[in-house]
Length: 248
Image (cartoon, rainbow, N blue to C red):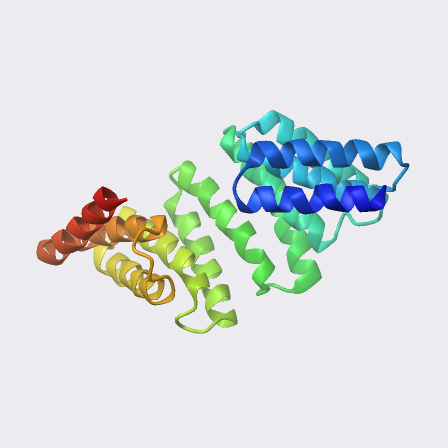
């Protein structure tokens, strides 16, 4: 039974890597049924439930994902893991899907609990806090509260910068996020500096011009440069993005 269960879980991981959420869901549902049938404990069932929730999130089945996340959290509490790093990550995911349903009061509770648990377990500057801070920022962006979103994104970037080299690929996303926020605030020069830095890192680390993130960064940097009054450089980046899209 355990060998068959492991095969199902490995297959689900491969499906996730290929963004085949339907296949991942099928495999994890079978894994969950097998674990229950064989009388395996919550320590086995919890990660399967979380995986099912992740797959349903990928399929935008928010209510189904929520049910599985909440069941996983309840079982973690029975295992004495309610205040663990794993619980913080699960609460972060729960907050995300609640945001997707515009249930902002509920997501706020999930995020604050996730942040409190993560901070208590690992300290205020641990790398695992980054996705929690980012999700909290996206929530405020959805509510047009740019000031509180800014504080969270700046903290997120500071944590990443403290843990990686200055040209590490992990910096691309937080630089882009904060750059886009600055652009929305009318801080075009600051935005362009961050976005161009993100662009340089991505180009150095991922030379494939068909990479979707490259097109996004080119367009974002072009918009910031245009807002800053540098129309000529903005046009160069925009034309490059259009050329890449045409060649795909």
